[in-house]
Image: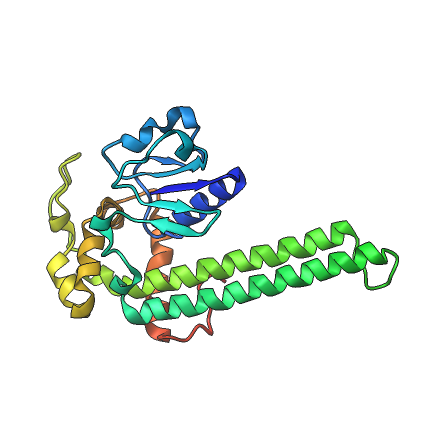
Length: 257
């Protein structure tokens, strides 16, 4: 995936957010949130990547046709015709509907915060000595707290989505019967792919097939099966899937408390 913008800070923020929201998966392939134009040959690499470049890249080069391009300045996405089937319609409907609703509510909250911040700044500029006018430092602190809260709410929305689509996955992990050989682990010996697929709604089998054939899913299963430096975070995700399954659509109890 290729992100592009004329604003370097936006490129970095979006790339970092995308990678973070993949949890419990972890991106294994090239990741360059702010790639210098002189190193843009990486876009021709025959493997998946997440790369951010200055939009002026397109003045000099044509990106590979198979690369999905996201213009962060115009909010447009270009996807190769061969991958045009990759739409939100593939996602499990219930989980996707909940995620969309949560994100829509958060977007409205962001718009409200921005409007209020602009109004407060205007009041302060017109009458800096008024009792209701906050100083620049106080406004900055208040804005930072609201931004942090919004970040946590966005993480919560995506965490609930991932927990919903992967619920009960632990039931399909196979017991380890032989010592693993370095670099030769067969994912089928670790996870009951067929059993997991049968437990999902038939309407969304295409989505789960695509997901389970990714390197990220394979790595996730390996980390979940063997001792890993991510044991603590994976145990947390296990707890999240249990809590989401028990609560259903209710978001009364936050996962990120």
